[in-house]
Image (cartoon, rainbow, N blue to C red; front, top):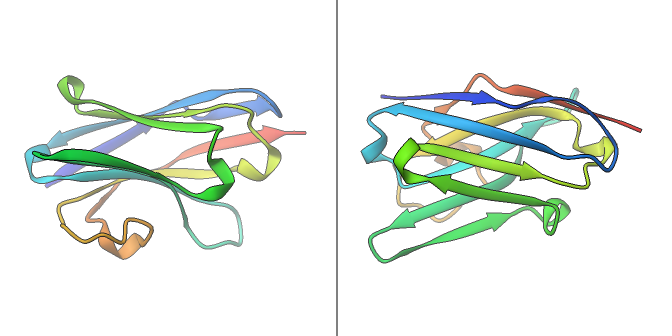
Length: 127
């Protein structure tokens, strides 16, 4: 099992920044991909960003609406993944969830390809 704990959410004005953190513990050696999803009220959970790693290298993915504004990164030593969010917009308001996968599938944008989820952290962007 892998446990994920998010932190860093809050209230910010449009144009501001926040950094989310996701600390992983447990069988972290079994995971090869971590990501962030978000869910706004009345909407489905949607993909935001993911980072994949392997012995041969890694990849980073973003949904189009956050490219150039959000940055996902990973600190191996701390088993922590970060989501730096800049130039925030009211439409970024949502509960943000950290997630991890043990699978080798490519479809990183699908919630069904992840095995573990955090409890979520609220991000609210005021206009």
